[in-house]
Length: 104
Image (cartoon, rainbow, N blue to C red):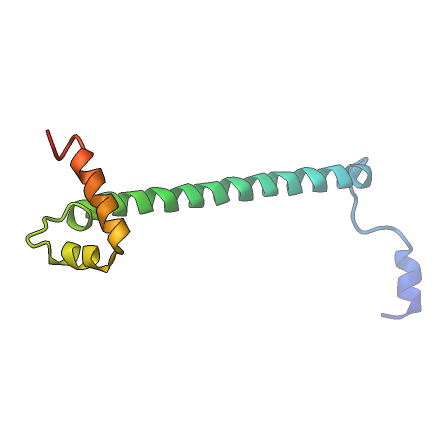
């Protein structure tokens, strides 16, 4: 392609844009960015709530095995009690003696 071919084509634009396209562009970009930010916030909340729900479900499934597991022997409790100071042992004994569930 030489200079004569360019002169023949001229400076005519090869494409057209709608009327007001460049004037509306900033507001359209801001609107799209706002929608994207909102979508990201919603997605972040969904992931967070899903993680919380999964954690609660796991705790609920294993609670009876871990928390409410039957204690056949109290050696671990006795060992823990023996580790306490004399004042702490006396305090616990007083609290347990006054407990309505133990004395019902």
